[in-house]
Length: 315
Image 1 (cartoon, rainbow, N blue to C red):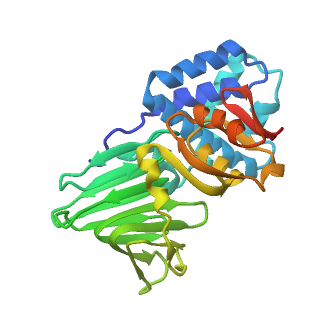
Image 2: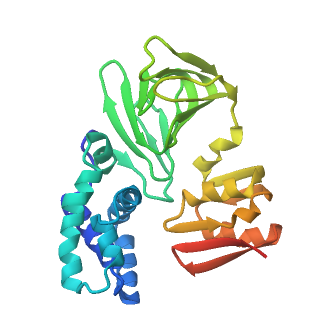
């Protein structure tokens, strides 16, 4: 399966051109509509766009004269100049920001999901894989077993006693499950393993000889160097496989942060709302419907500045 469904260089180039157009201060509403139509025309277009959006966030930490900042603040650029600079962004600054193999891998993964997409796969031995939003995964079938590489995002694996031996690698270590249903989610600084059935052993990448086995109902966060003590797993964390977000007295700020993973663009919340909590079962497939429910349960209002810019504010 390695090498299937890769993004082409042309798809990446087109996404860079659209992004460069919208960076320009003289971009029009017609440009924005045309870009939205291009993104909706093909799932690969949307995925290329999301990957470059993630690349753009990395520019926040580089000097202000970087290519993206120049495009964002220049008002005297012609459309032709903007399109020409897109090539520099994709081929120069973009490659500098995503120059390592690890950073490019999600673009060429065997299986990947766009922002807001949740997908189920089945391996030859019957093992089911659920890919959460913005997730990239490589699959290496072998004669004695299968090896998975989670490159980014979140994955739930559902195997049985009839499944072949499985090894799941990620940025921070390796997981060896035994007839298990478990999830693995990569955060910015560490990774979380939660076991819902069976058992799984986690081995940090840089801690030779150190490992911990988790049983059903246990979860642990780990980095490349250490593993935290096991805690009780939140069984509601599986609900995303059915397109649901289950909240039990969840702080509203955390709720919005979770919902934000499934939406393109900007979803902001007023920090003054940090004390509010929310309970309920909400849709991840229709995040606008989920946002519409908030004012019915809490003293908040939802303001749409555009389809891709939404703010949650106190009433």
